[in-house]
Image (cartoon, rainbow, N blue to C red; front, side):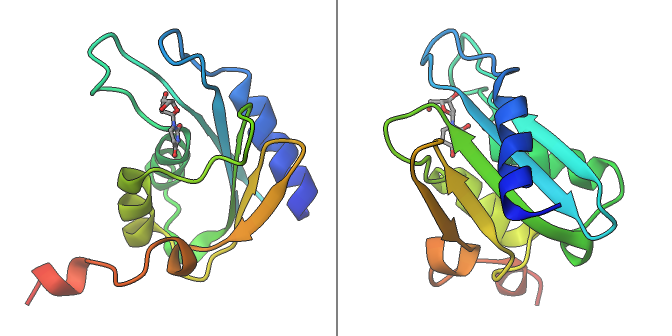
Length: 133
Ligand code: THU
C-alpha cells in the first residue's frame, strides 16, 4: 500500500467520526510492515475531556492487535478542516512513545498534504528513558 492509498484509508475512518460538539472530523490509518491497516477516528464525549483523537484511536488499535513501533510502517492523519490537521500535543506525546521518531506521518485534508514525523513534530522529547532509570 502506498502513501496515497493509506491516506484514502484514513478518509474512510473519518466517515465514522463521532464529533457532535466540534463538528471537526478526523481519520487516521496505520500501515503495518505486514500490510495490515488499523483505522482510528475522533470520538468525542459530552464531558469533552474524555474525547479521544483519531491518531490515538488508531495507534491504540494497532497495539491492541499485537503491533508495536517495530512493526508500524507509516501513519496517515486526515481531516475535513481548512488546513491539514497537525496532531495535538497529547497525540504527539503518545505517538513519541508508540512509534519511531522517523516513522512517516502523512497529513492531508484532501487539498494539501504534508509529510511529517514525530522527530519533526516534537523536538526534545520526554520519554521512557527519563522515567525508567
Ligand atoms: N482531534 C483529533 O482527532 N486529532 C488531533 O490531533 C487534533 C484534534 C479531534 C479531537 C476533537 O474531536 C476534534 O478534533 C476537535 O478538537
